[in-house]
Length: 542
Image 1: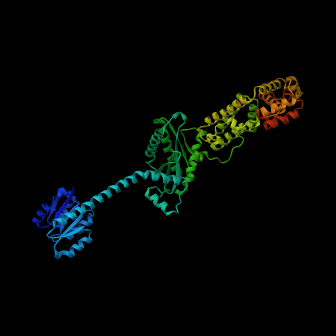
Image 2: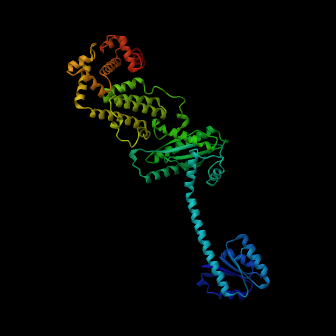
């Protein structure tokens, strides 16, 4: 029902209006009446009519003055003016004030009815429009977080320019802090692995839980905006002003982040690692700080999870070299060539132990891992196998798989598995007869390597194998010649003797089948990168 108020100074006219139409049937109800404009103004707020039928000619406050006052506070009420012929010009003024229509007295009931029905249609249409607008506004309010999230992601990726006036307006509309003197980016990542078995709902639940804790802790003392990046990490842009010392600001922020980290670790079934970028003086340079926070985060591979990592603490002033030495590379290849899986495993363990002790930067760890994998690939090519034979699964590349590893331990175990798989596959692919022959050659060398005059002729005669065929299958299946294998075997044995306490180079050379100590020294240096004397110095120093 639409509520109607009647304003007229004539009592009997008001009564006549009340009985002139079947109001309820038409969808209306008379909710109130007044005898002049002032009386009507006092009642409007309480009655809240949708339609007012008002006479122009009234004492104290006439209808035209009433409409003027009403329009100052309420523009939604529909007005129907009643007028006599002498007041026609006033009626036209009233129409200019937004009066819907004017009717002449005495009122024609059919004309009043038509006017009211027209008004009802207009009011219903306006109500539908208002409801639709309210619904749209609710959608806009509901989508505000998504719009803000999208904008902040663009900002973090460096895709926005402050020269664009539209960008500034969007920041104001989304209520993004742009008035601080300097900013930095913080990125929070939930520490998960394959054991968590989280579905999408679990991920969202814990992401929102960490976000709420973050908001609660940082809301006291910091101005910030928060979003989620494409990898579902929580990203925070924190602003501060120059009235606070920057070192004090950083110390306070680090304290809060450590508090956040400890609360998550204490009350959740998981931990978080937090990366902190460097300060930038312009909000539109925040992308650099964000990249730094990601680099800091990645260093959890070497530093471990459940930490607050500042980029300033992991930024490398220079590149450390020789993390994977020539000696280790040669030893690894030698162990692969003789198919000694135990030694291969031990060599990789030693390499990773050194990298742990060095506490190296994530990027250097990544480079070292790639070098280790390249040595394995080099061996595969040496023995005449193809990478497709060893690694038929092409769904994900080696580098992509390495990037998915969450810790240095995961990287180490994965690389060891690559080496194990390579040795096992190559071993299975070799023909049994050729493998048996090669094993006989290796055993013969192992038993006679101390003989100065040991050569291929002697090996072929003793094993009753054709010289050329023996050289062919050995090179084909091992990737090295028999002489190269013999030399590597002797040098390896020499290293073992040095490691076990032998310090006389001439004596060690003799024991591994070298009559000439100088030639032995050249061979040793070729494989291990340093002469025997230097190797002994290193042993004594360690």
